[in-house]
Length: 187
Image 1 (cartoon, rainbow, N blue to C red):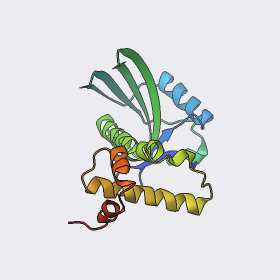
Image 2: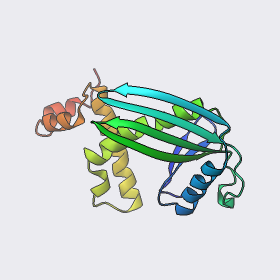
Image 3: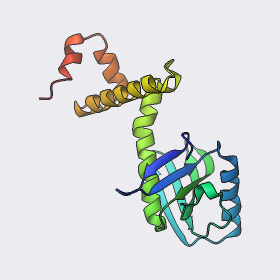
Image 4: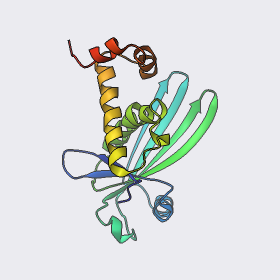
């Protein structure tokens, strides 16, 4: 699988749920074509209303993956997620596609995908936006990996100490060495 591919472990086994991204144009084209030709084997629709936002998510599962590239031969399901609604008064309509080594219900895939999005928003977004991970000048694999681990450690440490806003926590702690070192002792 591509290093750029987003992977989510669905359960404690070796089952994968992989997001199909734009950097995989053939696979993305295959997913779009398949979902237009076949009827889904399972469908789940959920409506969510939060903070001035209304989203309807429809998850469709396809398990007849004829003609898929042999490098994806472990795939058992293609999942299409349609999101439509309004955000800040603006209408939106998006499609996302996933492959999985599992055969599961649409509701199970919906929960797994939402769980991944929570991880993406709760950790990776913070690492990129608050800590500037994507623009960091460190590019060698070991150094970039070590710094990513350190960023995750700091995020978990700040959250364990009760900071909800990591930006505010960093501003508060950046010039107070005593407070900064107090983070390392859990009381």
